[in-house]
Amino acid sequence: MESLMAAQQHHESKLKLIEASTNVIRAKGYAATTVDDICHKAGVTKGSFFHHFKSKDELAVAAATYFGTMSVALFATAPYASSATRWIACSAIWTFAGSFFRAN
Picture 1 (cartoon, helix red, strand yellow):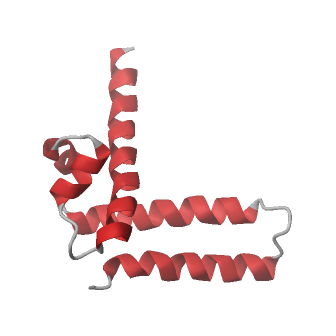
Picture 2: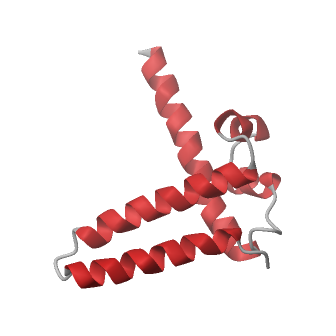
């Protein structure tokens, strides 16, 4: 039971970091965002950050992947979505995700 709780906390802190990174990066830009900014927004320690990710770059890739996966799933199940509109939506999502890596 304790290992299950530890796994849930592990997943929860990683998800908090991913979600916080998208908010902070959108507000400040990728180059201006620090690991400390992300940790503060997520409410986790810097040790927790480095437990899950080797660098801010690795977190950004995970955040873009997470965002893309969640968005594709959302658009794919939308009742109005045709294959053409799904392609446009997916293209827009990956363009947005790529903006994480552009310098401000």
